[in-house]
Image 1 (cartoon, each protein chain N blue to C red):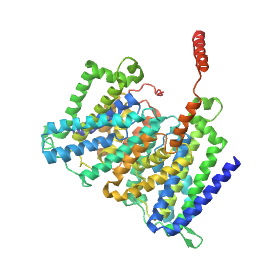
Image 2: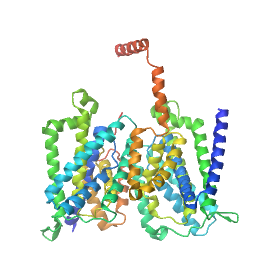
Image 3: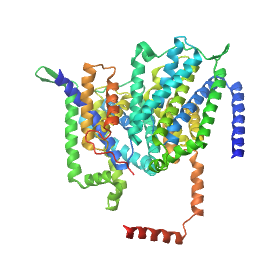
Image 4: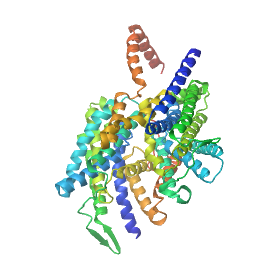
Length: 337
Length: 290
């Protein structure tokens, strides 16, 4: 375990330095795409808490993203202190997540998916129609760049350093969570809710907590997004964009931290690589998503696992004696009824 | 005035109902929520308006027939090549595959027909019916007539024909149907074809009411989805009644309250239903699918 942590942290440090180096040599446009990728990583890793670890389909991620972004922007444009606004925006988003987590306790599967999606539609409408607060369809402009002391983070290169740090923190938190006792418990209730509550796991509390954590990460991503671009508009947070984050985590692979990260990077960069196809690049991208899912339904990180599972099956083929015992077992149960 | 509102609401509701019915059939048969249903409506509208009506100048009935054939083939193709490989994987994977499909269809439509919205020429647009002081557009009447005819055909098919009974059996319990000798693989393809045809008909009927554009289907499908919940998910009558209720409610809501917030009203109702009566109007208590 200790060795693994060492290996993971060294890999992370190396990756970090490589990326920082890349940011110096790449052109401005690519750094911007990298920045967007980092924000997508936060959103995907955040969503993975409720979907991957908790096994609940949430489609409210874009709404949370928007709530964080709008809360922060509105406050900043009223000239209140920046850091306070950011913290406040994240907390507000967390509270909304908490409030949405409560009805989610009663809903499962597609019911929950639709409830959260409906919430996303309503939020989108409000962002577009509450013109005196949100600026309507045009959104809000003139959001000042972040500043640390007297240093203004007004270029993509400078923002990259901040975003990379926050994204890394997000990833590390997610890894720590998945390895911690509480993470184990969430996995237990994902796999079997009834059994989990039998052994004393408070499933309701877990679900609400996961929703809140997901929402807070999305809120944080929203704050950073507003600071990165300097303007926000409702179409970025439209209900249809929530599917992007789901695609990211499912294509990457659910339930681990690497999956959503891989998914977010792919989702951001594949369209960029397909740009040579001119107008048809998004259609091809849709096709790529379908093919990826059909080829690897459990996500790209599961491809290796599939191969392994086949090998393992061959090793642990049931021997006839086991089969006989299990048959007798069923027969015995039959009599006792 | 209120009669006019009811008719236009029912017409929009009929569109929701047709799409909701397709949802419900696919859901019952294979347990997949198809998030590309709205894009099917859109593609059908484009095929109808963009190719058949504008380039080939086919008469309306022939146009509808061609769209139906096209959609049926498309449905069988998707059942074979997208649903079938995913039948054993998780619900979420299947959902994301349908999301990928909707992304693909939206962008392919822009590619083929361009970003400019099309206007669908329809023979019913010019017709206006006068009943007392109210005037109805022929388009609304044609939509309602189409819904009635379709429902009649569906009842006949499910009750009297071998294929219809096999479809119902598969929808109720695929596993048992298979053991009873129903060729479920084929029947599932037929169910997909039928659901796609329903979405296609909805698209052809809807096209004259709005501009035909790549985004025309997504929100309509979401409302059809809401109609399923309001009526009772997985329930055929529920899909119909839910769709009609939602349509009428929206017509009145946008006239008396605000046309800007009409979606807030519909989805607020949806969330209220989900919290207080998740089994919908025709509710049987929710049972989990194994």
